[in-house]
Length: 508
Image (cartoon, rainbow, N blue to C red):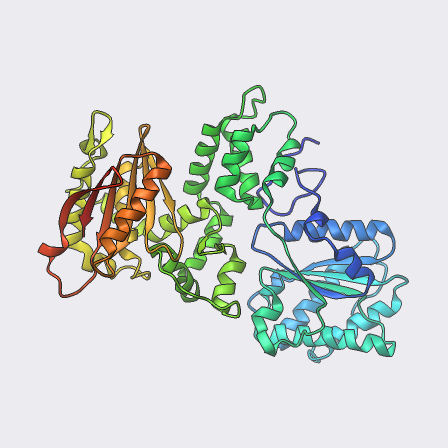
């Protein structure tokens, strides 16, 4: 069978390109041998289910254990233990019936589902008593369980674990797997204090991405192509697969005689950003949550916020995979997520801007193949003065509204004619943008006015950014959000020299 790059569901070694899963979680087999209960957590679409299915297969084929994979996704949303626990038992029963080795044993015969506080420990104890080999259960999507269902589930597993020391049969080893670490989610209230270890699945390293693509022997991914893919994905497994699939299948139409070029990567990235596959859409839905907004909004405007590792909102956003932490700041986990975050939050404004009758066509802002930034940004100043208060109120992310509205405006103007590269990071007190249009680059820095030092600080920061881009001309846009300052003072255009560079300061 010809293998493919997989973007739908778990990977299977006979069908899909994949890396050895156990290499990403070293030590699991030792824990199982030691009869331990442990946690695996990682962001969505990072390979958790693939790991569990492969682990179950290896253990079952090894002959030392019976291993049962059980997803709890069907129990999602059931917070009442009297409903949730019986649903879990029935899901286990179904998995036993489908298991080639375990289906000859009887699971939960004549179970009393009304006794939900003990039914799970009872049926598992009776089941393990029948078996001639130890039982390992890999529970997937554990973070789907809510409130009392989750508490009762964990308590009964803990009781079964403790009772093993008294000679009562129970599950040999259990993995609890999901997006979040159970102990972090429940804090000190967690009844599952018997976990020996917690694992997480990291993104692929650059070398792992290279090894992964080497399996596609029909075409080579050059070093330049690999570097570009790694830049955009930061090794996120779903994105690594998605870009390769887009290039091989859709851009090159499975014509393996063609070379994969860096421009194909750019094309694939833009397609994935605009297409908004289920993986990305489900992730971006989280932006509506207040706890996510609290952490993400400062990143959008470059504010510095200190978070404790026990701050659950902070940990939640990291667990989602939306943001990651460097030594100095919080940043989007990869440039693709960062781009989609901005487009998601500014999409409504972009649509409304496109419907304005007074908005000139993109060609009106192009002179001799170059963007007329003076005309473009002067129009935005007029637009902002007339509409800022009304439009800013439409945003849940009100502090970030100026940045989002400007980026929606720029995106609308250059759509299909160029692209915007963005650098977001907390603690920088700015956003760096670069418009790429017809082989020309236009570096822009956005800032909120904090004090009189904002402008000099912005000039220095933008000049440094321009050095990175080897640009001689840049645009510093400063939003003055003070209520008592007149528009006559807020709106201005000045040009300054900074380190030999021409920088235009645009007041808004």
